Image 1 (cartoon, rainbow, N blue to C red):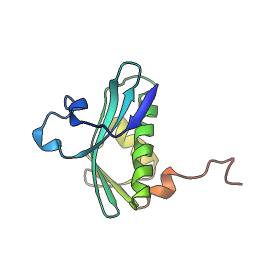
Image 2 (image 1 turned 90 degrees about the horizontal axis):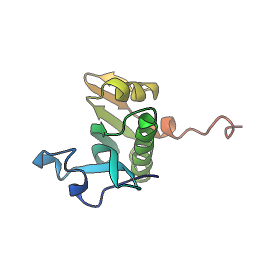
Image 3 (image 1 turned 180 degrees about the vertical axis):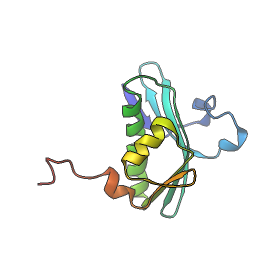
Image 4 (image 1 turned 30 degrees about the vertical axis):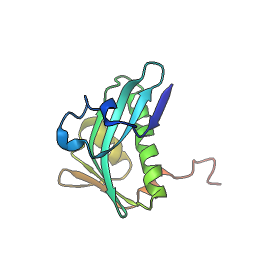
Amino acid sequence: MVKIGFPKAFSQIQALFPEKEKERDLYIVAENTVNSEILGAVRFLYKAEQVNIYEMIMTMKGDQAMAVFDGIIRTLLYKMAEDGCTSLSVKGASGEFAAYFKEHEFTEEGDTLIHKAFIGEFFKPCAGCSE
């Protein structure tokens, strides 16, 4: 089973983010509850209405990895929306991560992907619910 949440201690993810200056940042992780293995993590900070994602690491590989990544992002954005955030920037996304955000109508500004109203994009009612 996969559990997505905020790690209780930095030591759980320290191997993924070994730089000392990253200890005080915020993280959300996906964990395999069977063996306590970290499947992926996102490093972020937020202030006022803005969420900034700085780093995304997926240790899980294969077909399900992007589904788990989507779960991490949606869980993070749901929490950030509850805290009043509406704008999201993603620094240095590449490969599958960049494609994921571009599919959600992010615009490029240099090496940053921006969405000024992520709530409407990530939490649309499904086709069956919109009737």
